[in-house]
Image (cartoon, rainbow, N blue to C red; front, side, top):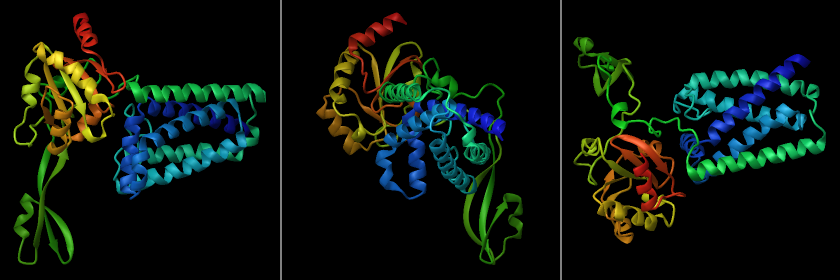
Amino acid sequence: MKIVTQISRILVGVLFIISGFIKANDTIGFSYKLVEYFEILHMPIFIDYAVGLAMVICIFEIIVGVALLIGAYSYLNAWLLLLMIVFFTLLTGYSAITNKVTDCGCFGDAIKLKPVESFIKDLVLLVFILFIFIGHKYIKPLFNKGIETVGLGISLVVVTAFTLYTYMFLPKIDYLPYKVGNNIKTLMTYPVGAERDVYEMVFIYQKDGKQIELGINELGIINDTYKFIDRKDKLVKQGFKLQIYDFKVYDRNMNIEYTDSLLADTSGYKLLIIQKSIEESRKGTGEQLAALTAPWVQNGNKVWALTASSNDIVEPYRHANQLMYDYYTMDPTPLKSIVRSNPGIVLMKGNTIVKKWSSYAIPTYEMLKKHTEQQ
């Protein structure tokens, strides 16, 4: 039992630290996952606190892992681990059954796990943590109480500082397809010879109080006892999956698509202003955006401002800050992936992303110009 407890302690401690740091690297992204759970579980009261809760969970997970590795507070830690894993096992089990959340976010965007995979992972962790809980008396502190307290204190300060830094100044490691160095158009284009998704047309009918799905070749059995409900396209074969598939730019009224226009210039520099929600933009950034973009536009450069906000919010904001560019519409999902900030600034050369800035580090025009001259 002693050996099993020690092995479990090391495996769980290391896993918690790695998982915590991956999520702490992108607490905004983790908060989006928490919002999904809050909406599904009908807990809207927590949505406004999702970012703060994401930070607390990341920090807590890492500190628990550190405490486990150095053998600190073994009895308390065993209880915390058990309560945590029971909660998350129930949560991932619910996701596996309902398939309402397709990725638990356990390892951020670094490692995507399907609901069933997340549930199995938590079941395995539950076994290891049960060994820790039963055999916690075999976990002895590696250091005396003073060193132990100092070590945990330093860990808390370092982890908190890292979490706050990545929240304010973007993730240190970007696992998303819009990371610096990637070409958006390339990642939107199918390679030569790549297979596409194959769909089958399915018709939904109701018969004897039950809904049934029929393929187009089965419609010959239809008679007056069948009631048509709906028609859908069913994926029957997965083809090549594009890394970027939802980058679609429209005018303010969603009537005209401008995606090709944005991607047409493949040589010069262009600036993307990303504001998923203008009403939720960080306060005071409108003046900074105006100071940055005015000379940029005056010198013949293009600004593409992308938002999911409605026109009655966009226009008052644009005029209030005297912004010399128009806003275009994009779905909020890709906007959340392009840059983890609201607003966020993306500098592109052609269609390649060369630099990103958060709302806490909006550059001046001089800084932007200097950066383009260095490319």
